[in-house]
Length: 237
Image (cartoon, rainbow, N blue to C red; front, top):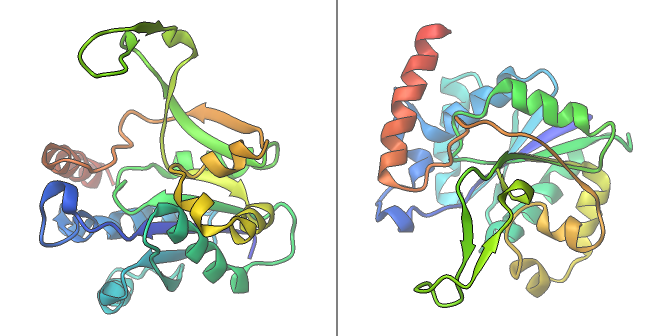
């Protein structure tokens, strides 16, 4: 197998005060994570998928695999206590499925981004021919200020140099695995985004155009917006 995706599904829904994590809520007739997995299923450049999740959800995810013919789903790995440790868990679980091709790639995707397009997924894999790390991003369009205390402006940033990063990101699998396997857990847990660790050790991270519609479900209003967009996408399919 050359290219694989790791879908991070360990969130608990605490920020939205939910009993059921948002990635397992039903939108437009399917759980949010199923929409994510279906896009990966449709992407010819991705050959397999590993999900990291709390093991209490393993049976349900496997049932959705059967219900929605998600044949690319290969394994469910235990989620870590934070994003970085979940990435490590997913990378390690993917290792047995990967071939030795040094250009093999891995996409790191959030289970709460149901609107990521197949076009973007394909583009990320394609760009790995030129770069070891690829991140979609959108230009910052509002004036950006800094404030040390959150009450008074103390600086102004040049927005022409600022970009808002999105998931999914893509990486050359084997060096990315080695990086996550060899970095001590406390160092991993001090970081946030999927690109932070490789960038911190000197990797060049390529930016490609992100998608305005590639919404990460964080707040209740995001659920409503995604529901509308998913239903509209279903009408066009």
